[in-house]
Length: 119
Image 1: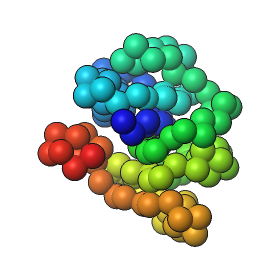
Image 2: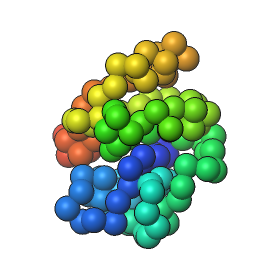
Image 3: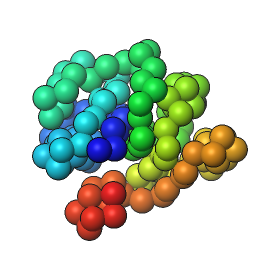
Image 4: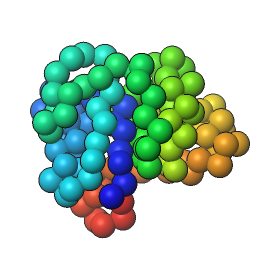
């Protein structure tokens, strides 16, 4: 299964990152939660962007473009197969860097992709 890193993970049940984490786990996908605040989402601890995971297939982005710059090197170091920019997180600058390294860039809603079998 595609291991997914959720960047911007939140324990707030009203946030899309929370909903996606739970949906991914229910569907059997392994996840890594990365965020600023401590806690657990879908039974997985939220960790800071310090440990680089090298087995990530997908990064799903829930951080706005104004706050993404500190994560650029971290994302690139994970060397994912693809990065999904969810609505409101689209970032042409980061997208260009990803594409230059052969990483697929998708502008879509991860939750919709999961619900429609496009994930």
